[in-house]
Image 1 (cartoon, one colour):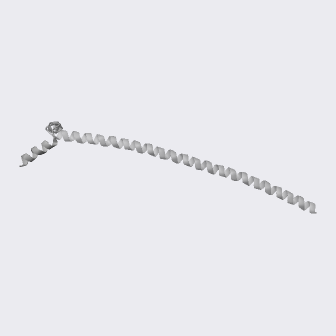
Image 2: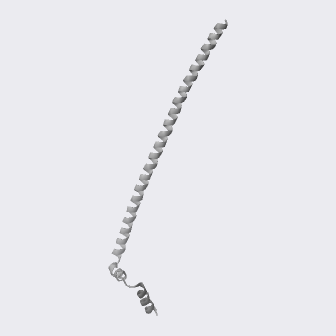
Image 3: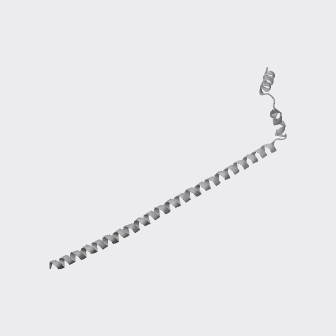
Length: 111
């Protein structure tokens, strides 16, 4: 009877060891899936942030182009509204005259 109980205990022990081994394998599989999921999430997050950066750069470029177009259109409208050429008014100031001489002339005219 003792030998039967000993055999039953040995079988129970072997079954426990087998169950423990199976659980350990399942744990390893779950950990592997978890790590794979985490790495895929990181790759996806990096992909999203890079596309956002690209989109942001594209939007910045578009904004610069829109701003330049609006400035050109505004200047065109201003020039259309003037009967005289703006370059005629600007050219005397583009000469390389001394700024102090200009100020002195203006002061003389005021006095």
